[in-house]
Length: 509
Ligand SMILES: Cc1ncc(COP(=O)(O)O)c(C=O)c1O
Image (cartoon, rainbow, N blue to C red):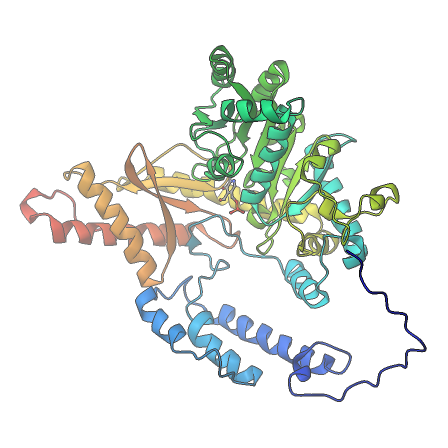
C-alpha cells in the first residue's frame, strides 16, 4: 500500500482557541487553579469521612444502595465539582468500606501510608504511561530502580529484573507464562501441541487460586495444577518424580510465602533445593509475605526465597500501598523476553539496540500506570525500616489476637500464622457441626451488617471458619476482644432462634 505524502510549506502557528466549557475541565496551564481546588475538595471529603468514621462499614445492602446509583442520569451532568462530590457522598463515600479503621479485619487490604497517597495524586495528574520511555522518561528509571531494589532485598543476584504489574494475580500469570515458555524453549510448533497438555504445575494446597486461573489462561490441561501439602516431608520431590514417571513435564513449582488464609510460609529453602536438583522453575508467590523483606525482625522467615526463579511481590498487601502496586521479579532477565513483542508504532526492535528502556518489552500490559511512584515516595519519605516496623506490628498484633482467641472457651482457633491472620470459629457446646457452620456464617454477616466490624470467612475441611486478617497497626487487642464478643453474641442469637431452648447448653454470647 502506498500512502500519500504531504509536504507542508510554511506552517503558520495556530492561534490558541479560546476557552470553551468543555476545555475548562481539561488540566492545562489555564486550569491549574481549578485542578488544585478540585483535588483539595476531594481530599477534604475523604479526610472528613475518615475522621468521623465510627466503624469500618455502614452495613448497607446492595438492594439499598443500587437504586440510588441506578437513579443517576449519566447523560445529565451536574457541571459542578461540589454537586458531584455531594452526590458521591451518597453513592460511595458514606457507605465505603474503610480499611484504615481498626476493626476492619477481613481481607488482605491494608491501610495506606500518606507518602503513597501523595504519589497516587501526582502519578494520576501527570498520567505517565510506563510502556515506553517516550511516555514516561524518569518514571521508567524510577520503576527500574525499585525493581532492582526489590530484587536486591530478595537476593536474586546481578541478572535479576522484573516489572510492576496490576496485582498478584497478574504477577503469578506472568511468572507462569515465563515458566511455560522456558519448559517449551526447545520445542518445535508441532512439539508444543503435544507437550502443552502434558505440562504440570505443582502448587501448595493453600496457595492462591490465581495459579489455577493462570493455568487455564495458559492453555494447560484442566488437571495441570497438582496441589500438595508442602510440609518438610519431601511432598514436592515425590510429586515431581510421580509426574515424570507418568511421562508428564513439571514446568513450575509454586511455593507460597504467606498463604491467603493461614499466613503460612512454605519451606522455601527445601523446595528450592528440590527444584534445583530436578531442574524445575521455582516461583514464589510472596504477594502477602513480601512485607517480611523489610521487616527488622522477621526477614529470616523468607530464607530460601533468594533461590527462586521468579517472585510475586504485592506492595498493596503488606507495604501499605494503595491498590494497585505489585511486581514480578525474576532471577534471569533474559526470561522476560517471553513477553516481548515489537510493534513498529511503539517499541520497534531497533530501540533495543539503541538501549532505549521500554518497559513494555517486559510487561503483559501496554498502557500502564506509574504505580511505582507510590512506593518510591514511601521509601524516600519513610524508608524501608519504617514500613517493616508497621508490618512487624501487625504480625505481633495477630499473635496477640491468636492468644486471645485460643484462651477463649467460646472459640476454637487453628494453627498460628507466621504473618497476620487468625482462623477460628465460634464453638458452642451442643449443636452439631452444620448448625455451628450456619451460626458462624450468620455471625459474620450480622457483624458486617452492624457496621461495627468486618471479618472474613473461609472453609477448612468443609467447615465454616472465620478469619481475621490484621493489617492495621492501629488495631488493638481491645478491638479484637470487642469483635469476638460481637461474633459470639450474633452466633448465639442465631442458635437460639433455630434450636429449641431445651437442646442448648450455651448462653447467648
Ligand atoms: C498469596 C496470594 N497470591 C496472589 C493473590 C492475588 O493478588 P491480587 O489480588 O493482587 O491479584 C493473593 C490475593 O489475596 C494472595 O493472597
